[in-house]
Amino acid sequence: MKFSVFVAPKAVKSDLAATTKEEVIAELVQSLVEAQEILAKDKDDIIKAIMRREELGSTGIGRGVAVPHTKHPSVKKLVGTVGVSAQGLDFESLDGQKASLFFLLVSPPDRPGDHLRALENISRQLRDEQFCRVLSQSKTVEEILELLEEADSSQASN
Image (cartoon, rainbow, N blue to C red):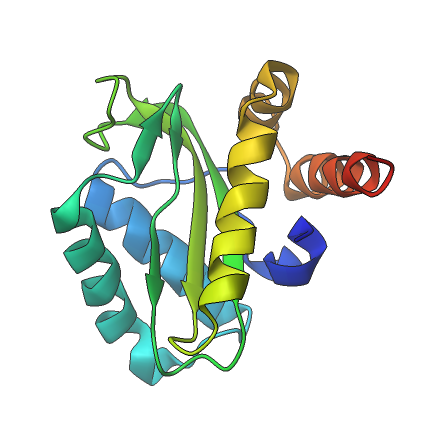
């Protein structure tokens, strides 16, 4: 599943201000509200659902990357965003390193296939060290979107 299918361009953040796990999740969920991908009235409940998922085990997968996600009945289709934190923050990652790249997903409970395909695409791209390096050095939303577009194009040719 391509990034263009689920990443909301207007929700992408190149300069996250958050310094804690809960703050970064709240900031990214707020960006989805501002992009009109989720309703403001559902924001707090979605943040709580993601934090409950984090209690099961950190989605900080290592190498500076975290993929906080949840299923929530308020969304009708898979939505997501990407955020970059220049300084990085403690996300209780599996390797103990700070996380600076964040892919946040919210999907409807009745569409687990979409959720899994999006997670699979993210993890495939994150195995590419150049992708991670370029993404972590991105200074603007435009640079992030361009990189995601390139990743989608290379996926199409595989």
